[in-house]
Image 1 (cartoon, rainbow, N blue to C red):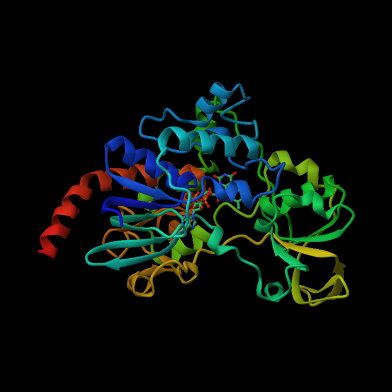
Image 2 (cartoon, rainbow, N blue to C red):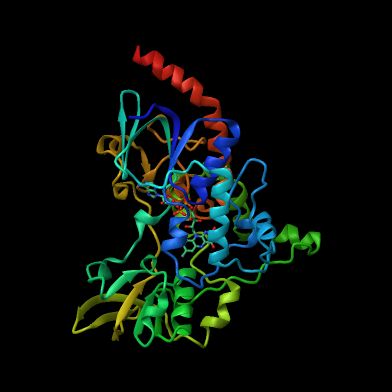
Length: 410
Ligand SMILES: Cc1cc2nc3c(=O)[nH]c(=O)nc-3n(C[C@H](O)[C@H](O)[C@H](O)COP(=O)(O)OP(=O)(O)OC[C@H]3O[C@@H](n4cnc5c(N)ncnc54)[C@H](O)[C@@H]3O)c2cc1C
């Protein structure tokens, strides 16, 4: 039985580690649970590169000292703010380095339940312990929310998997693999599969595959920079707004926030990936999957175009690189009563300007709050806003809340 701590952080990806760095710097008492950089270590393919630029791939600490640039300098690795893709290996090592320096007390275990009890929170841990906290920050990322389209979701794992199931795509050497999707994950998986000797077919519902342009030169003339400003998520005024103004995004009408959170900045491939896909991997565009069946070691997909033309496609395996859909109903570790009290927007927790949900003391950061703070929450770049805001908020309220809780409990 442990004593109550001011804050419990659930999660140890870019957002959870950044929140820890801010709380540690302010001297706020906290415990943190999660597996460091798990999504990046266990749910992404070896050989992958980040789509975000170097300067937009920093975790956040209050002094801005533990940047990707600082890590690369300390480790003798190449680094550039723009134009030099960051490898997955480098980013994982950076996250682990950041954790050692800024979140050394991380407890590497999962939280199996979060419930409200006696005016505070009780967290059950996978290692059998129980922790109490006055406030909880959920920084659980996307791993609970992998999305496979209905037509494929019932297929056995031997026939169809989500892209997050793979770290080593070379296991498909010599096999026919259909990759479904048109985003960076689909395009890069297709390239890696092709390069490891699989026979790949990329299948997308969209009529075309979109590619991002090369990053704009930061020192271009002022007029050009004013016409098309460059920010963390890319270039252009709307992208600048999403990158820099999550607090203003929050005031857009709800329907607009939901739509933009889902559709802005995607799906598209990074410019440096284009040569590895175009002319290398066959792409069928404008194709919806109508039906799917598996048997005799083969998957068969029935396809239909917008014009109503039907065709069939056979493969040894289908990889659904179809993204993630955050949804409170899939946060199985949340106690039912607590989950029922959560006000939601598009099935994600609605949070206020300090990232606090409708359950007092329960905070949510990262992709799960994109419909509130915007598309920046889907990217590492948003960790600075989230961790800075939550860090300031909790540094200011932890003691007060503990006094209130104690007073209420008298
Ligand atoms: C293939 C792919 C490529 C991407 N490339 C980029 C990119 O180039 N640039 C970019 O900015 N973004 C990229 N993203 C988006 C990326 O997912 C987010 O930017 C980032 O990971 C969000 O950080 P996070 O901390 O919220 O979540 P995550 O990185 O998903 O971390 C979640 C953490 O929560 C923990 N956790 C979950 N459940 C529990 C539990 N019950 N108990 C305890 N701990 C728990 C996990 O162990 C993990 O530590 C990519 C995503 C994918 C899938």
